[in-house]
Amino acid sequence: MAVCEECKWFFALEDDPTIGDCVTRVVDPRCAYWTAKPVESTDDACGNFQEKS
Image 1 (cartoon, helix red, strand yellow):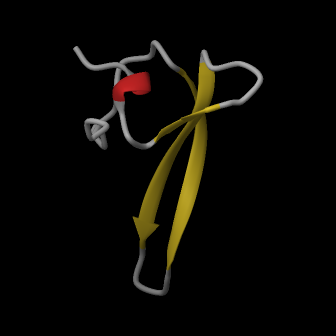
Image 2 (image 1 turned 135 degrees about the horizontal axis):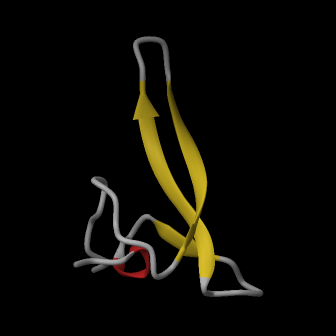
């Protein structure tokens, strides 16, 4: 199973690479925006997982 640190949307913190933010683009009828949710690098990947290239 894939983990967050393998995803292109995971951005690790500079001072602690074991935690970071999962950044997701959300589009609604009026606008588009980005959300960030704190996650650990070893968490199971979510439905937005995309392999880092």
